[in-house]
Image 1 (cartoon, rainbow, N blue to C red):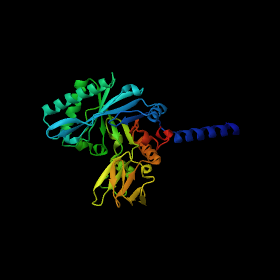
Image 2 (tube, one colour):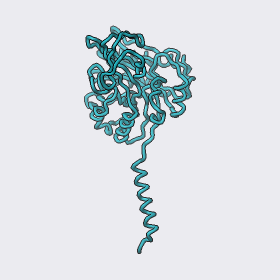
Image 3 (cartoon, helix red, strand yellow):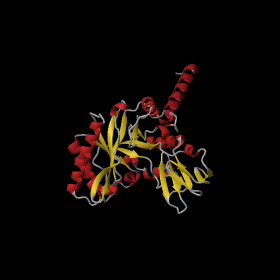
Image 4 (cartoon, rainbow, N blue to C red):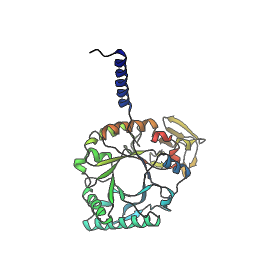
Length: 334
């Protein structure tokens, strides 16, 4: 039986359209943000971004924990937190230094858990956050601290009655057999800070995609549900005459407009006359390397992650800041 030519052409067009549609189809992701400033204040630009991107969750850093002497103490506690400023679900987040867990005994870990849970509840209550279902812990644990850290996570889940999530670094994916897998149901992969800014001269220390790909070769085998944190922050790496380095966060090339500097390389500037910027004194001859994340690098990173993570995942941008948002069209972040 011969198929009429018109019908044959119709089927060909239909097949080609389906093929092109499936090949060109892009995955969509829910968009969330970290809020990592110590003084809580939402600007109109930030509020508009949250609304336009239909953000559901804000991971709000409430405080850090660090070891002072022999004690684990809160530092950098957030000020003026007011949960009513945004119509989102807030997830209290606590950063804990890895050294906090070094040489802790079981009783000290349990005490730390109680203190963290108590302070999370206190700050949340004073900030009118009447209900939250999750607490996130950010800690770059290592093989030597994993036992104490994992105990902390288990105990926090028990005494808080909340879901507990945690951040996941690239090396903790690649060396998971050595560094262990936390007793959790959900984690957020931090796909940034791939290099030490003190050691890198040419590469972008915020995100080197080729290095990330190497560390994440087996990401699809990681046994915990993952969301992904991506960077939209920028900073300046300032080097003085002695080679000592200082990091200045939320620094952009625009901060150097009108300043006595000359460009001596891609994103690299040399100070020609002494001047102050962001309360930092810069002397003639200092080098300033400005690092940021281009829209194209974000796209390439998401494309790679889409290949590695088969289940739906949210993107959590680090972090919500009007100055940083101005570097991106919102359709790039969607």
